[in-house]
Length: 211
Image (cartoon, rainbow, N blue to C red; front, side, top):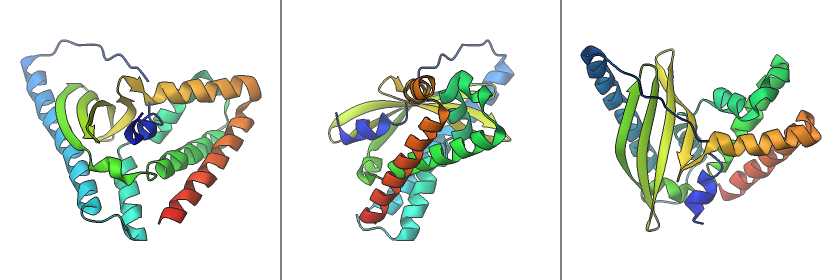
């Protein structure tokens, strides 16, 4: 398993997008929206690569910018809620807020563990839009291996955000759901939070040592 897949496996769920019939006017509008989504993803990729280009010694400001660009497309609240499944409904507003905060900190810190993967060559194969839902299929080539990476997107308040990232057919949300829900069933939500806080501390310490 390559480093790319090791990181990507932290972001994984299979989701079924149902086809819907559209009128010609809708089709034209959705074609325009697909183009906008592609431009958004391409712009993000280009901005990341522009920082990575030509060096592996980044300033604190550059690392902060990279972390924002890499993770800015993700809707952590929705991803976290779906990962917890039915257990989300059992949480108080304060518990939900802390969970999303710690969960997102873990993912953001882990995303900085091997910045070389973001120099992967990316091709954009297909983008499907159905109203406020979209599915973007891309491929990345890193260290000689081509891996499909797919984004499940929703538009909220005019912005497209990723609710799931599917890498090589494996879903981020599904991977987290298996892990998180197993811990909650066996040991409770408090134990899950203890584990996530520990992972956050370790990941952030690793980031600081490599900065």
